[in-house]
Image 1 (cartoon, rainbow, N blue to C red):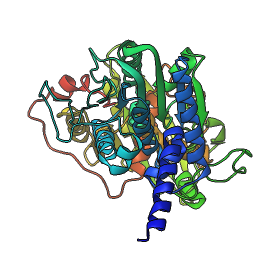
Image 2 (cartoon, rainbow, N blue to C red):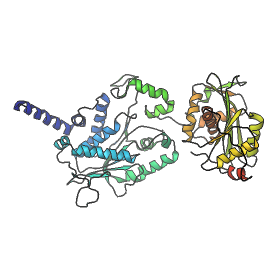
Image 3 (cartoon, rainbow, N blue to C red):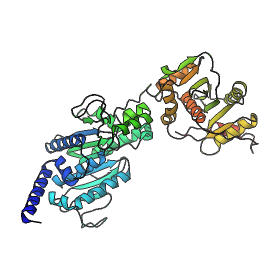
Image 4 (spheres, one colour):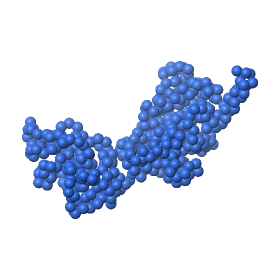
Length: 491
């Protein structure tokens, strides 16, 4: 290579390094020259740079970046951490995510960055041990849980949300997706535990002027970051829907966020396949799943008679989980030739001594042998025992038991989707208003037995085959009585 050409390349390299030290966006381009570029990455880089300036000024910044999945947000935050540590290798950074795997992946990515020649040229003062060290007290640590900077006070530590950080201190706290997915987000227990960890453990590790950075996909209106925004008015929130809902500075209404990576066509396919409230939360960062949001019972058409031609009938039962106060509910749903569904009957029975006989009467006198019976099966033999008892008493009936899978909201979603697009009819009856009231308040209402029964009946309608026919004698004539009260939904 001619000397003049080499000198020009050296000059360009020196300029790129100098810009990288001042600008996070320039740093990303220097370190990743082949990365896909779009306005969104520049905008994120600008917000992160401002976060660092506020941190330097002692403003205790709190930045929440909400964005859809698979748009490169984790990669951006890992790059930002490496840039921060280059700015000041005395910083103590703790990174948390819902998964240990994600934390280890971030750790290993950082190790590769810190080892690279480019990084060493840009930030020569930030060095890590050249060999993996786990326990040697005289050497700076470098393993899958912590990276210490040689000769400095700073480190990078990765852990899981709700994981232990006792004894640690931090200057920059990073949360990268604190909730694993919809099932966890819909669990009030998980949300409470995560919030307790965030407030009692994580935030208590912050130094005087520490900064909080959260980058995530929203799952629920009451998820931990939703609560954080509600409780801390100084949190700055920047939110990026996958598809613009109105004209924005860098894109028009209806345009994709990162078309270079996820096209509008791809996003529309995802939207068509998803239940609307979950699309709004996951891709549009607009969690709205509250009372009355899942079911829209006003879209149900009330009919005076069941239409002719029903191709299949199912009675789905939800069994009371306590002896006193709870209901056992049975929903009868039929499938019509045009692909719609009709709710023909709903029965609610208070748990008690007459509960078993009421189920048998409803099966024999109202439904008949043309109606399949769907029952929840608890782990063990309880559900199967009930099926055996029913088929022994009602010879020739088709009774299917199956375990519950997923939380209540996830199980209800398929039938709610049919309700909300107007594909469900309902026979007029005195039970209508009680059932639709439960729909309006689900999943936060006092009772959800009717919804569980509807979900089970609908799921059974979608299955193929004739189900399982249980028959024969039980080894214990009292087996049903012994096990009936122990039946529980698996939530």
